[in-house]
Image (cartoon, rainbow, N blue to C red):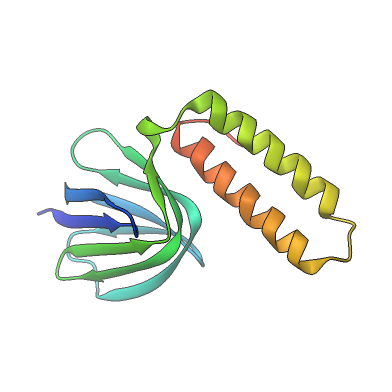
Length: 137
């Protein structure tokens, strides 16, 4: 049995196909979904979703949102998403390095909003780089 998986961002549908297995970056950790999964509604963190339509895995960078699992249908509504294969790995690596530097600079500042923005930018850059197959410490 397979799952019907849809990843919908405000500007496009990133994935709409069947899959054997899905791994989601929920706010409480990685969440594996197989056919027959119990109904569930969960918040998603910024991170990499992995979907296995056949033998190989496909990585999709998610920018936070929600997932609903019911009757072997996985509906994912996100703020933004990109397939790893469509992301330039070198640009993603440079963006990650820049985001990490910015995050390190604001760690000792009193400006809470600046820290939150830098942390979110770092998470987005890390997810994009990981979706390309890049390894992060």
